[in-house]
Amino acid sequence: MTRNTSLSFRQIFDLNFGFFGVQIAYALQSANISRIFATLGADPHQLSFFWVLPPLMGMIVQPLVGKYSDRTWCRLGRRKPYLLGGALVAVLVMLMLPNAGSFTFGSRLLLGLNGAMWFGLFSLIFLDTSINVAMQPFKMMVGDMVGDNQKAEGYSVQSFLCNAGSLAGYLFPIFFTWIGLANTAPAGVIPQSVIWSFYCGALILILCVLYTSLRVKEMPPREYARFHGLDETVSGSSESVSFVRLLKKAPSTFWTVSVVQFFCWASFLFLWTYTNGAIADNCWGVSDPGSEAYQDAGNWVGVLFAVEAVGAMLWALVIPRFRTLKAAYVVSLLLGAVGFASVWFIHDRWLLFAGFALIGVVWAAMLALPFTLVTNSLKDHIGTYLGLFNCSICLPQIIAAATGGLVLNLVGGSQAAMFIIAAALLVCGAACVFIIKENKE
Image (cartoon, rainbow, N blue to C red; front, side):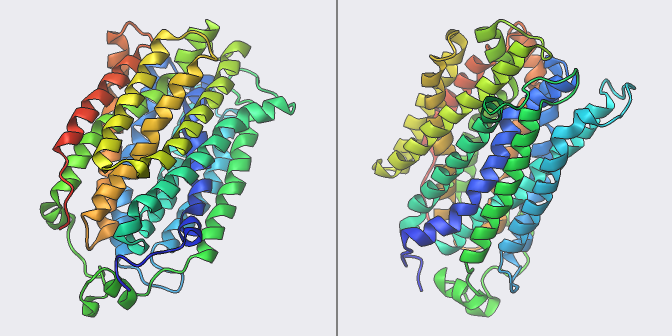
């Protein structure tokens, strides 16, 4: 078996299907966390700080998952034990997080946060960490089991399923509101429409992960070594190598793609943090999280994110048609910048569909192209390298979250203005694509 051995579409689909469920969980988190914390009493200038710890945990956990899964060879497989463990923890947290406002914590403040917000914060840390633990093995398995000639297809299918999951997750709150569940609740309590969205997301997550776990059989050590052209006596990547040593040996593609990643993920951190407030202010003219109009705006954010997911699904089908990966990357980032900037100018909730469809374009590219470029440049220690590469996702989010309140003050407190900042970041990212050198080490 060689790295140019082809898999059927069904095999690639089964390999990635669990990502559908994982992304439902991630979509519920990204679309509703700011809404949840605003409902629990957080000030708009505090919102970005709630997003610091999750990516910080990701920077710690992901390299470890990569390193130890590289050396894991057991009856369940190589990556699947981590996939199943992360999914189980995520399910438990998804059942608890939306109930943060329903527990009795008292009104005492600690560092400016009430008990419900502290409970929600720690739940968010565990949720984001467990989702990432469940998500990362899918990226690694494509690197492990898909040949170089199908990597773009493999990650494009993953991107498609990822955004299909996002579509479902984003629409859950408005769906449950439509069938009659309450979209408002007493002060400091999360509405039933959001609570049941998390419950259903948890169920679908575990079912999808079990499907992939049962359908996919990972390669044993010697077959893996032959597939990747490695010395069979060391069983692939089983030997332990320090992170520092691997970073010193990392191909240039690893570093140059990471520069582009910085601008992309910082822009999306602003999207997830400020969309609720921006849409409520621009289209509903309200800023009070306890008002019915604000909660209606929160549901509409789910619809807009669903439009983004549709745009991403369609663009994932277009990406393989570009002559070069770099051309697809540049075009995607520039179209996404137009979509971000449009949020500042548009005050009609329906017209926002066009802007969020363009935001979906860059999201599809971010899910597929960086991993295609990086894994094509790698030969060994794929899991560890992808875990380290995840720092290029986490670090920009940490920086954007830590500075978000300051930037918000600089733009006059307008959450919609943060989308202009995000658009400028994507233009910078598009310019940096030209420094990427596609190479095989």
